[in-house]
Amino acid sequence: MTAHDHPHPSAPSAPPSRGPDDPAAGEGHAQAVEPLPDEQGAQVVALLPDEQGAQVVELLPDERRAQVVELLRRRGVVRVNELAAELDVSVITVRRDIALLSSQGLLRRVRGGAVLHGSAVADTLAGVTPQGTPPAPEPGQEAGAASVRSVTGPGAVPGEAAPTTVPGGQVGGPDQEQARATVGMVVPSLDYYWPDVIRGAREAAAASGARLVLRGATYQAADERRQLSRLVGTAGVDGLLVAPTTTGDEGEELVRWLQGAGVPVVLVERAATVGPHREAMESVVSDHVFGAAMAVRHLATLGHRRVGVLTTTQSPTTPHVRRGWRQACGELGLPLDGTPDLTTVDQRDPGWPEALDAVLDACVASGTTALLVHSDPEAIRLVERCQERGIRVPGDLSVVTYDDEVAELCDPPLTAVRPPKAAIGRAAYRLLAERLADEDPQRPTHRVVIEPRLIVRASSAPPQP
Image (cartoon, rainbow, N blue to C red):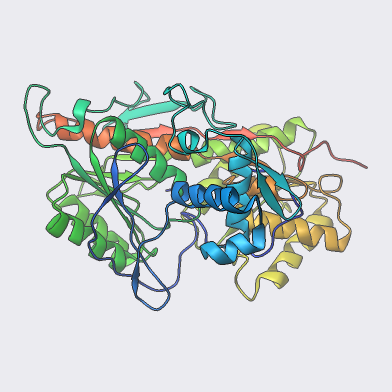
């Protein structure tokens, strides 16, 4: 399970590498480097192979944004294309960074770039206000907005909220004086979707004084196995946070390996079962079924009676989005027969343009007036193609996207379902810390489910004649 905020110049070009739903090509290897302290005191090591197989240390998003601000301090004004080339990232990543920094009052967006705006830059980037207090939540992430359910044991019912962090990051009971915990974290991308998950885990680790060792993988079970083996065998981690491949023969073998790894494991945006009784592994996931159903209910409330769905073939989130869409359509009495229910290649595939036209043809032929699309890059491309074909968004076709990574950069800005990424990271670390601190060998398995939020923007409106 996975799955994956920012204003709007014209719709961006060529969205970059993707999130928990986008397998990356090739396999990579990471090697140990000295960890560097992050802005909040937790130690974070991020490793990712470059295209030639050489080992590189990838800038985390906070570090990249700090570099954007520093370049602005030196030059006064920067252009998006120049920043993308200088930082070796995509244009859409730079636009997303500028949008976030603008929302924090650190710069002002201008056509094609940004200028420095305001002060107290270093404190804000470090996550501390000038008064030394924690910063306000990011836009759209109000405190307490995410609903959390904790499920204990296979088949149990919703219960208490996620457990709290272990004080001091210690392994063992509160009265034991032991070294701080070292936690390994393996995620399939350091770019799309996962940076906010990493940030949440990092904040929770920093609060408890733990050391977080991060490795980036490549959506390949064999690569994930190598990364995890090194963390357990070489780095000596006390526990693992991991978003593994769980399907296919290699994925199933990886799940069995994790079960016998000898350290506590919490799955992040994934779920898996083990053993003859299919016992659940501990996990923290977004409720993507609920999120997709929420999108359908929003569109039905606007008056849409035929709501289609578009997903991509290789996304781990696709089954959950489709299940939520079908459930909500059934509950609301919306017709499924003849309504577009399509799974296509993603927008980087050579067959995407033809597949996209087939989707729009199906919407026109069936009288479909609204479409749920997973994920943002596909939704942005779909809106661009609508404009080329004279299909008005939202006048002729309302569009809701699932992930909200770059949805606000579209023109018009896209209504989006936003998985609670930072909350997922925080809850995953806290669940692992609780497991490390609990000496009870009979402690039951915990599964935490956190609800996404719907962010309403300009791409959804009542159907027009």
